[in-house]
Length: 135
Length: 146
Length: 119
Image 1 (cartoon, one colour):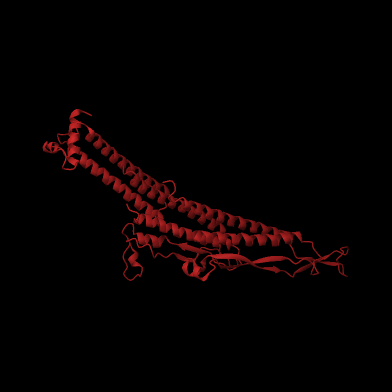
Image 2 (cartoon, rainbow over the protein chains, first blue to last red):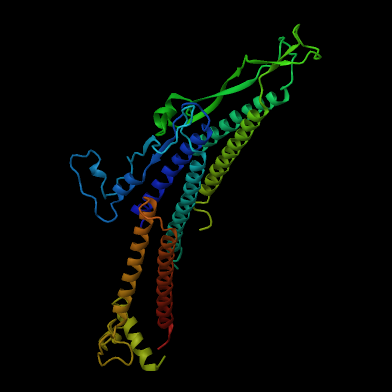
């Protein structure tokens, strides 16, 4: 286990994306009454799973410009997918934000964020413990 | 820094909803006002919301991956309605020659509904701010206590 | 611990030490990490030597760590929604590692203790 290990990178990458997601959700909530505003979603799970290739299941697609990211932990150029929420219910002023759904997403995002921080701490803790026990 | 930007976005939401509250509570308070400084009855107010990208500077927009997807909200204008209803009340001091008074076209139910909606929207923005704040505090815990 | 076991333990540790020390012990062969557990010298099936036991345990700790890593990666990428399973796996790996570390410390302490003995 070293400081650069793949799992730690995965955890910190997920942390970054969840921070972005929180900003997007805040934007949706703030604009819940703005006429014509379309609710936005942010997806990073697929990109991250591809980069991790945990089960070795992903097929390398040579035609895909991003294939070099498969499995080898190429985390530096991961892009999230940001798009209009297809599940938005259009109200009469063109707004598609569902505040309750956004609140639920926010709660889930926060919970996962906390979990990721905790896991990062655990990993760092074990490393520091191993360092400290040289007596 | 995305979390700080989130705070800015949510606080814009708070400000916008507060203006909305002000407009509708003013409407309720002035439902019977027949005399205003500009002459004529009170004109019903409504706020119109508009959004704009949260990132201020051009460089922020270039660097940030959210780019223009995260938007702050503003009460961009206050619209005054020119609608007027005529009530028949000859004894009213502002009644015209036929005994009709020009009253503002304000339905208290509508105004109340708007105020409740504004309040709920305000609360949802407060929740967003609290969540953002907690996430930032949690981030500070990385490396602490090991 | 019986005296006989202590003696063989010393042989075991002596073999593990730098070669420059106690050639007499080295000459008194039989000391190596493959000493069978007491009572099982008959080579009963399933008997493990201390060396095998150690490397097995280290292997187990390692695989627990791997499982925990995989579990964390799956959680980060959203592939798994099992918070409790991940946290349990991490905790297991954590405890296993700390235990192994403690065992290592204790073995080294015991070794030093024995080295201190005036023979």
